[in-house]
Length: 493
Image (cartoon, rainbow, N blue to C red; front, side):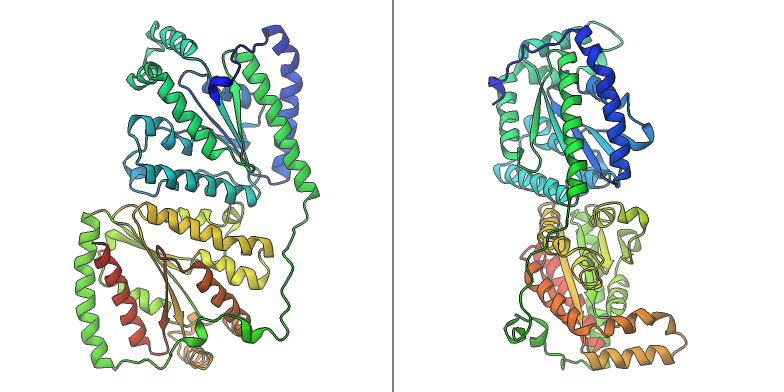
């Protein structure tokens, strides 16, 4: 692909000056309109070393309001970034609604510069392309505009620019040994870039190749295409009407609905003496395993969902009693705040993903999207229906990074929930645990049961399974959770 690009295209400085001001005025206007429309925008620049990424970024931001954009330069991963899933450092930099994030190199570094210097295995490369495409798709379907530029120059032009930089003490530091090696192996690097473009040039997130030999031409093309893409985004936002799939008829179909919860045996129990003995043994074992996963740098993600008063807190407490407090965090999930609402719904969970060797326990999780948000109408039908795929892909990404991912549904029946609610109301030490919202949610038990069954069926995978915990007996439930976590860690070790 790239070897067919005409790199002789140029524009005189006078011609560029004639169009610069109108283009800049249009960009400034579109930034304001996109901010008012709450459209998040990502603009990323990839390409050859010395191709002019910094120059183009400078020309891009010149007419923009600096309060509305951030520029990120993506270097090699530092130690902290290497200890997190690959995409974690980019999730943490995503723009809020109405903001612009500009990347001087981005998530593509891994399959471009880094892959050339330290080749990935075919499996790792395939997984990375898959994660990148999924990442961009879920952001775009949520309303983010992603514009991708690849700056292309010839081997001869790159060498000339390196020589010019090296000739001055003020700029020689900008040329590294890796840069010179890339120029020496230009044809190999060209093939690698062609492969990257072919695997990630999608209908939703296409690449634009900028012929960057002439800086005026490259800047004019960049600004013109940005204006076109941002205007399209605004037009689409105005014309957008949320489409929904036709609803299936419900009358007479209840008996055909696949169910998980209906087959759970809630009579399982355990006496107090057995519980205490098992608890002591399992907590000691988990304590030893916690040290081992820290030594081997294995991250663990545990998500707890379940009915109100289903026993999530009690199970989490018995887990953490066995853990070194320096090596885990419990993240309680409540309704998103204004900042979190301004980002993709998964953004707030990526902030807390554990680094290698650590454990994050989510008390409620991203699955609120397909339960409470679905039932209460806090998201559209389109949004919760595509969330199953998005959550599966996120968990697969965590698994690719080496994480153990377990998801627990703490299950009780309706009568047991009512008993626990009344117990909480009558106990002053526990009254804080019961709210009017709990009773309102209970009135929608049947709706939640349908949503939970679908969630369990569509998102229980080999790399991130759901474990339904029979919770009418708290002792039995806590022991099952401990045994499951221990078994998963031992299996990995």
